Image (tube, rainbow, N blue to C red):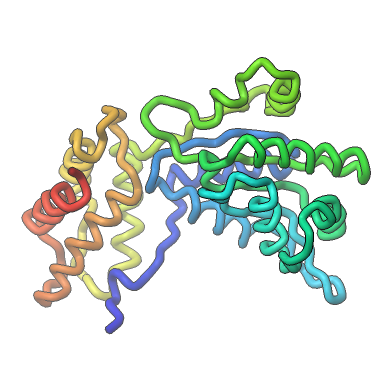
Length: 286
């Protein structure tokens, strides 16, 4: 049975998404290279999908389509370059079968024909050395053969204060020096922060509008400070960043709204929100 609260995937143009997509747009428009990191659950994948839908050119030209930006997920357990290459083939609707050594050098021709301008790799923390070297070779080949300069966004999940991929890209070998030289001068490594208390308030205002039909008296903004306080406790914010992760906020709100909906309420109480916070703390935080 469908539930009017939880059976909806909602994209919100939050402060995080605006900052995140600003970096994606920079890479696309300026053909620059960046490593972009953010916490798990912050909304990276949803932001990528929204950006691709909103800005990529996919107008039909005969039987072919054009892709301004191409986004794929990094292979997690297959370190071979073919694993990443095959995901690119699949993303543009090309067959993945055949000998990789033969198809490998056709990929840049396809990307040029499709007018790809920027490559975006989600979950880039899972990229192997072979994957990274393949991206360098692919983009070098595109510039050499077709004069096509690609933007590149390696979008990674951060843990603590460490910047993903920085250790690999800091190696002294000439290959990694060449890779580093392609990174943007101003924003080579970029960490996108989660939400402040004021930004949490902006999100709550948007959610009030979205759920108004089911909860005509909903006034989430009243609980802005309490929600911010609960979600910056060590269980949710172990690094002490004093920032709220979008996934945690949405899980708390939707859990409380589901409980309120089941009891026929038209508002959500502070007690219900607090109980939802305590439940999430027990369930998802060891």
